[in-house]
Length: 90
Image (tube, rainbow, N blue to C red):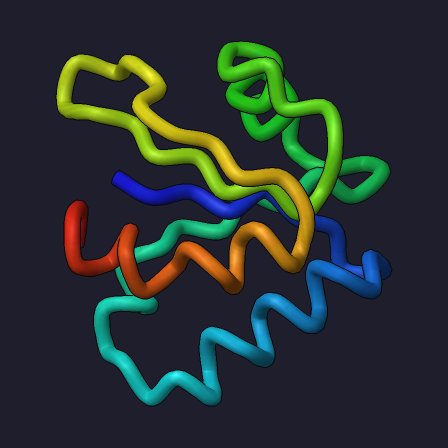
């Protein structure tokens, strides 16, 4: 599973989401967005804590047993690696 941790007012997060849309790759729909805005669900915060996410945007790849396989923090690392990650995990 691929998860993107983001905030609605985060500039790099907005750019990453736009980049996903411009890819015209239906596999990007498999990336689940976890919003970490102020006042977000406690469940989202716990999920971020579990995988030690401390910044947005962060893309995390989690295997079927719930173990973190890969993590990319920041807009540039995410956009540079998304095609490889989709080919490998989506």
